[in-house]
Image (cartoon, rainbow, N blue to C red; front, top):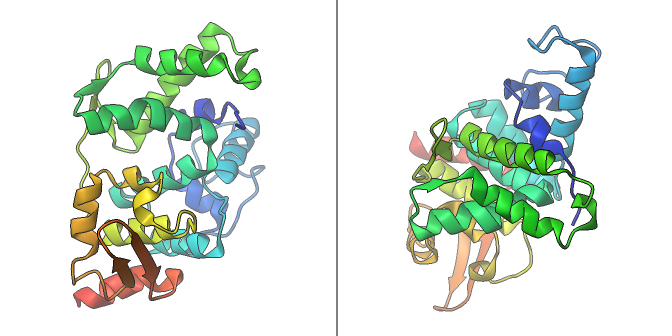
Length: 253
């Protein structure tokens, strides 16, 4: 596992539009961190720190298809509640510590029907990881506590939690548009070929049975082809990734 402290940096990020700015997305031209008139962040050093964290966690893609989907989604919609979900998916794919905490803390709580997540839950998971990961051996107790707090702050920024002292889990339901984006995002992972076995399926915030019920609906299948025999589900996008968002909007017209 590759572990870094980017959680602590991103948890302090107040301006999500910096993702579009640093990525040169939409009407934005890529900018240098030396010039920060585009943000309220006061020092070039701080801007560079955020820029590096953003590039490593939000602007790194395994496939050209996902990068093109990312660009089109943010260009058309900007940063809103929908694109925040996509940012959460991309971050989880790029940051192994985030992915670990999602798998050991957030999703077990979400799918078990728990009402809230405590910082002690996150700290306990980090201490457990510290026992097996040499990269965490040098992290002090205060650093682990800060990381746990920033992780919960990030989940709140993604609109997955609410509250100040007590972090309550919010129910999520993917709109038709974001359900299709989610399907295309999951399809980028070629292994396993059976989507039902994908470790990423839980990121749709629905039970597997609910996912199956939605994915076979006729209103969606104009965007992909499916093969399903009760145990194995395979999905093949039928339009290019970069055209998905525009195609969804055209289908509504």
